[in-house]
Image (tube, rainbow over all chains, first blue to last red; front, side, top):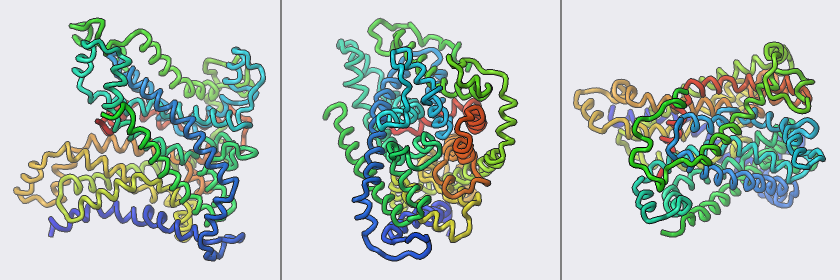
Length: 293
Length: 294
């Protein structure tokens, strides 16, 4: 009795909670997405795939998709490359190793909202530190960072990068430390430069770790929410013409500002499809790193 | 931070030559130092503004040292009625500690079962957890979750922001791995032979062995949950917020009062900084231990 039943008893809290707060909402989203919730927000009527066809023809939705993907690429590519270089540096023999490791992790322990608030102020048009610094290199016109796509995307991408580069570097470092050191010593004796060792040994050996970080960054990047919301002073529109509205903001705007639940649920499913596509593309891309062995 | 001055005996120099691939060049050290400065600067900047006045905050050139107005500014944040800042702070503490305790307990139970007990469907169930870890449940199910809370009458209450976070696939996965490497199979068998029940084994054998893993999971859950923003913003009301929701309203309502906003922000990250200063070493260790490796 004990042997048979207790294991199920031990895992039951997780699965009961998962059924209620994980699985049910997930499956029910599909049902909600096939409904039209009218203007009153009361009664719903079944409309089949109408929400999806409307969404696919909705230029605001596509704008949000383009913004999300744009910010994602702008943030993730430099972030992971920098994290790799940083991890490589942290992997050297250093005095005060713990100090440097903790130092690069500091951003992770500030809250996302806090980061976004501080950076939004630093990017302020009139009194922001970034515009002041740019003045020294000859950019005298004060940039209104929120106003254009390129500038708002850049600003939001730097917030994401500032917070996550150190975290990814620490994860890469953990991967690098499992590589046997004699591999490098042998390569050194053969006259391989440090750069060549990085490409030929380090990168291929930590490929599983890289795939992991790409997965996590893809899911995090495509569901980006807090940074752009705070950059828009806690609004969901992402600027006057939605120049930095992400899909997550669009879902909240449709579902909880306009109370069009069905439409928001359909957008959530399309976001999921986008995540699957993103993860798939990235996986194929990363698999090629370090050549085929 | 004793590590700064600590020289590890024998680890330098001995038998190394210029070819040594692990030698840190001066450039490496400068780059690392610069990165740490960049990492700290925005937090330092937060403290500068939070301790100044609004006219100093927009000075040109900008102030680079903290001022003397921190205490006064904190008073202002706490007395700004529309922000409900103290309520937010207390709510966040309640929500985050409840979530942390239950995630750790639920994960430790399940981790024990998956790592050391035999039952039908074990691999299938563990696999299902791994797959759902890939799905951003919070964003995907947000509409039905909200409707559920409306039906239950829980919108605007802390229950709404506690219950959905009690399940954490990552936690179960991590504790399964940790139990697997920290508790030898024979130890469980021996206790079994001695006639201990499964729950007794959990209490006497598993719990003492996996405590470090539980601590790391607790730290990570605390930091993650303290940060939660999207769902609380939707389901809570402005007069009963979590701290993140509270500072977001503070920002929206007092757009040009940087000092007020920054002081609130500084207070909102204070618990995180305390945790980091006290347990930084464990956090780094835990992250590196949990990382996917070659």
